[in-house]
Amino acid sequence: MKVFGEQLEPDRSAELELRAELEQAGLDTTGLYAYVLPYNDGRQGAALYAVLDSSQGFRFPTSSDQNAMLAYMVQLANSPALATAGVDRIALDYRDASGESVLITTAPAESIRKFARGEIGREAFFQELEARTDPGSLTEGVLP
Image 1 (cartoon, rainbow, N blue to C red):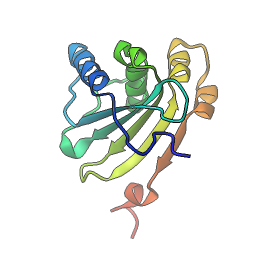
Image 2 (cartoon, one colour):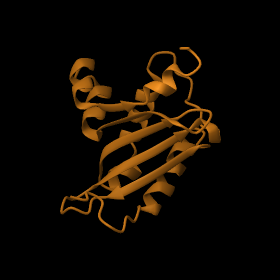
Image 3 (tube, helix red, strand yellow):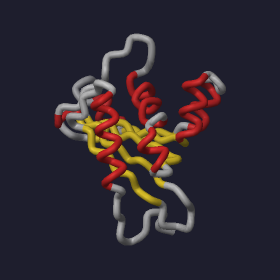
Image 4 (cartoon, rainbow, N blue to C red):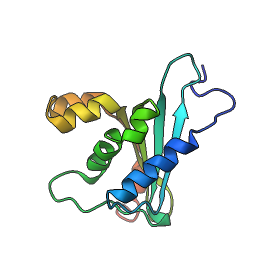
């Protein structure tokens, strides 16, 4: 089954609105590539696939009280532009200084919002979160 179909057409207007929202909130969008992908398997809604590419200048906002990637997921899950586009799942693909994918995380937008509001705890949220990492990218230069 192809969830996004043969001819994937991202919702460009939602991406532009999201970028404007983030910039208006004072967040630098350099190195952010966002794709709002409507489902093409009969379901209503869409998913956000956001590439956070540090090789292209992406930097997480400084936040001392939270995990930076999780804080970014919360920012995206609370986006009015993404709500209007029907985004119900958010995926982040963090890329290192060489442009290699290091970590991909995804979770339902509602679970992210519930966690941010304190309605579910960290353990319950992490059961909803899916992640994939390249162990080689994490150990490169560390192991012989």
